[in-house]
Length: 273
Image (cartoon, rainbow, N blue to C red; front, side, top):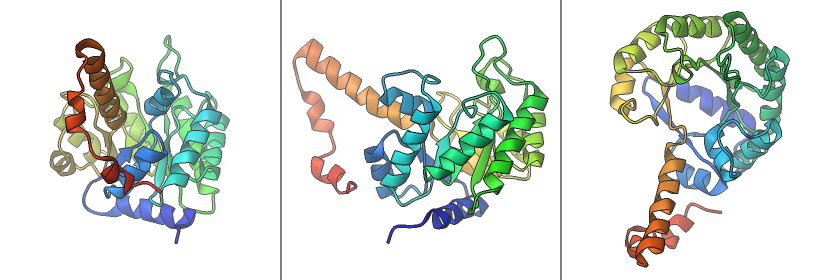
């Protein structure tokens, strides 16, 4: 029997409350979501960059309507919880953030993230007060739902030219006080910084794997205090890298040796409906 949205929400919340870290796998279409869920990942997330890639665009180049449609597709494809990468809420005001949370919930997801990256190259990070107001509004929208929507608040300092750990922690603590359920600062430079962030907060912390040299093992991250590990575009890039290498072999060598390393259609098919 298909799990209800309320059931998935409760399952997702429980994953964050367990003493060990879990990996939330970022999918990019229904098939990849089903494969990942079938392999045993307990939850699925969207990725703004991966979903943009499926439309032939770069990260930050999809509309809210497209992001919500993508979230709906993934949520309908699997019975495990799905959380959505909602960028900055697709607008600068608190009202934009709140409305995006409501729309994501209507699409079937049970969690989502709002970040403080503005998308404006001249002012990439929202001012502190504006950032907190936006998270506060998103929390309000989440709490008004009929199920426990898990809201993640992201501080993007380290990805957008402001690698200030003190300011990052200040923002995350403010987001926590505003009611965010999970805190997230992608791009932290080392495990010491990860541990400092985790020890500065009482709510669960998400760590993003995907940057070479700044991606640590599950055991290391769990020991540092992380409770959730997301993969960003890692799996999408892994799939696209396989396509790229196979296509180059065909084009440049005229050979098909890549076929010897492929997973069989029978194995892949067992995860699909």
